Length: 156
Image 1 (cartoon, rainbow, N blue to C red):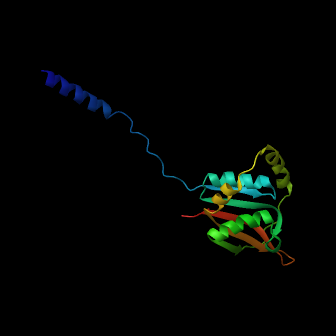
Image 2 (cartoon, rainbow, N blue to C red; image 1 turned 45 degrees about the vertical axis):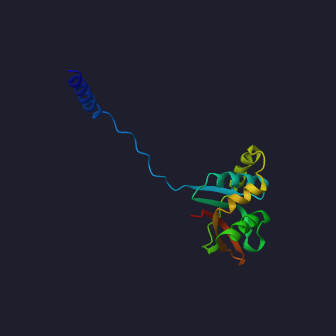
């Protein structure tokens, strides 16, 4: 009799379980892509470190002003050198883009003032070594190779 009651209870539980929703499956990880504007400041180093700490698949670095390949900022050169010494650093020529509104630089001011602190040099360097870089540039009317953006891609 006990055995029959146990079987009936088990059968009732199983029939009720059919109506329960299945656990939600975890969606596959989506590739991440981030964007960051370059400014020649220690603040940029901290922001870049923070973005790379999130380990995005790609990070686009846009230029806030005109930087040529022959007159590259030492700050940007340091990052690209670290990447080039430890991975792949390519140059890719693109068509000259249309002139952009310079108001984007003023939009950075609140961000610059809100950032506090610096990342330590060793940690920053370690983050850069995990990425490859592709520098996109165009030739302006004067023949200067002007950097448009840099794409950092996480190494496999």
